[in-house]
Length: 77
Image 1 (cartoon, rainbow, N blue to C red):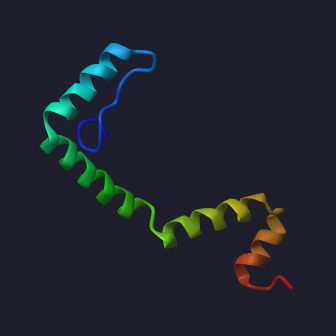
Image 2: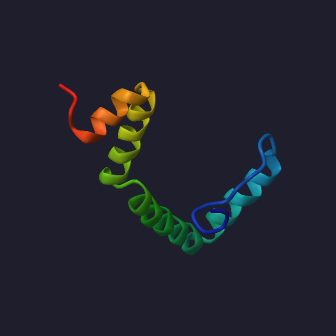
């Protein structure tokens, strides 16, 4: 999230990157706030429960349709 958890910089734009790094060097309060917000966002989005559900969904998506139904129903031997 640009300017909330960090800065978005166009690829292959070293001048823009240098400018944003200078802001963070000159304003440690902004760097710290972005770090805190990034950490909060990561903890919210990447819980073990959420990640496990996404991985399970990927595996279920790879199964043939009938096996996926059996897996969800708990009848796979």
